[in-house]
Length: 347
Image (tube, rainbow, N blue to C red; front, side):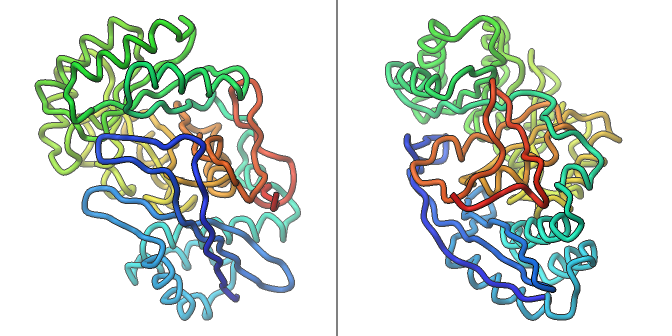
């Protein structure tokens, strides 16, 4: 099995601001594995969360480390490959890209879509949300209008945790509230930007405005703060940065209502499946999220879309120059293609 990668840069139509900063572009890596004349594709992308910063340069180095490991394996040994990469502490985004490529290769070898190999539905169980970042009330309203250019939007996620405080968060949400349809599914993501007191107060305020849940209200390293908010919140709490792999889930039981699974954060579809089964066994809700992925990475994640409660795979919908074609946006939902592998082709 041979591994190769290519660096490319993507630019957002609209820069995304969260509590930790603003991003307008990213450098991603297209990863390919070749075996028996078949090629599988995957994607790694740079991202940064507390205690884990994975830059493009770093991921290139990690992929070079992975080359030697992969030479001793066949693509059908997916579980062994994943475990070997984890044992060597390869960065999660690099593992994710390799894992995607292996799933893509296996689907093509079987001449079946990955979602069919998994025995699950082609169609997502719920619509994908689109994200509105931290900005002025007027700019937030304009961003909503821009999202409507895609067609029908059924779910929206509003970023909060503004450095200007919860009054700024409220002003932005109130401006959006004037434009949002009553039927739209609403959620809020603070990206760890609130104190415990602010999170509890905001949960009461947001519950009165038909918000369904709050994502990562407090600092991800403080599980007791998360637990306190969970106990006193008027809304369900979803852990994101506090939950990276299946090993983190037992410690989150009784500290949140659900978890956000991101394949670049956990290490691909193989680990994402473990997270899904582990979380369900503990009675937790599930979300599929993303970083700065193209259609390649988000289509890979969307193979699991019929297994979760919330979907937030919208980064590719905000790109000027997506080099891939994958799942299609239709009536608010992301629909996987019925072609072998992940169902991704070059644009």
